Image 1 (tube, rainbow over the protein chains, first blue to last red):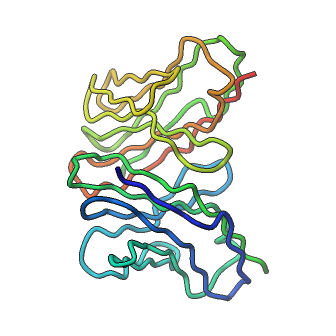
Image 2 (image 1 turned 90 degrees about the vertical axis):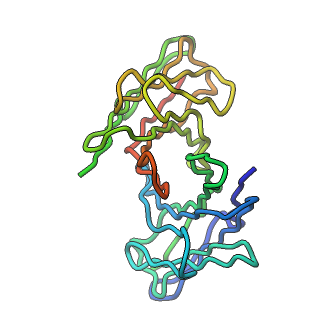
Length: 115
Length: 113
């Protein structure tokens, strides 16, 4: 069964510093990997995805993520954090070889960017 | 462009009362549709998904049911709510055959008292 782990409940970073939100996954085949962001009392917004090809994926709002197959990781990164980046971030996985279309989500990481 | 609508946005219901949450998608045809529940502002649990009219897959046994009476309409229901049904319910859609990112509605917050 596919699963995703986000080992940090919360990440604190100062504005202007780089940020990393960690994600590891477990699938039996090749994964499709996703990052979403959620602001309070809102739905989830899609940030980026990895399907195949270049391991470094660029997405919305200056975010990027690096797929590392040997470490089964897909960490979210941004070179310079903004206070407005403070939100709840979710990593998700889909295992296309199974035919399953739904995504399995991690437990979420709260990012707090201090001014 | 495609849009997804969920309603009601908030709902307060007594234990034992019925529930109906509705979700519609515009601007696409034959989408995959999903209901997720988010408890305590954290992880998302898949409740139901549908790949076509009348085709519903249930992920976990529970007090809820789902129906898809039209191509772009997905309804979450309960005959008798439990306290444990409280949460933030999110509807989502994805392209029928594609790389699979989901697009979410704004959610419906249900409080059962």
